Image (cartoon, rainbow, N blue to C red; front, side):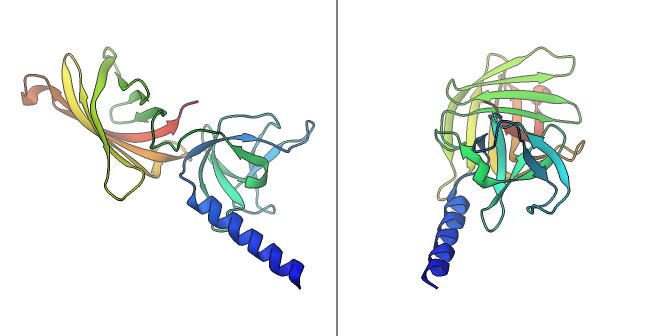
Length: 209
């Protein structure tokens, strides 16, 4: 009976620890035999359909969130997502994504665009179809009071200025079954303050190793 009680307590502590972590986060596969793989499944269950796999030495797996019991993590794949057993995933050291330094790769549609954000360097580079890369720099950055995972930042550039928000939440690109863990909204205007250069972007971001 004592052994059962201890097992229940340890399971509860593990589940609580996993729930307290900030996601998304990067993990490395650990504890999988060299001749085996870590299966990714459609549901957080060993009996669920297999969706993909990770090599025994795979690194930089992005875990978007964990199951209620903390035993499974939803891992982002190129076009989809799959649940992996957390006991075979080891979190990479370093701050949570909403704390500097963090690098993000973001994208959106209508029209297609992509952006690279490097919080350590305070830079954002925006690419649009048929347009030159636009470089912007952080003027200031702040977290929402009392709420983790919500960040606002003012951006300055030689031709455009703007404001962006990053929010830790489920996000989809509308083109695949992949899920992302961070949403980005970005608003820009010309430095002269005219409305001619005003534009807005909405998309999803992944953690960049």
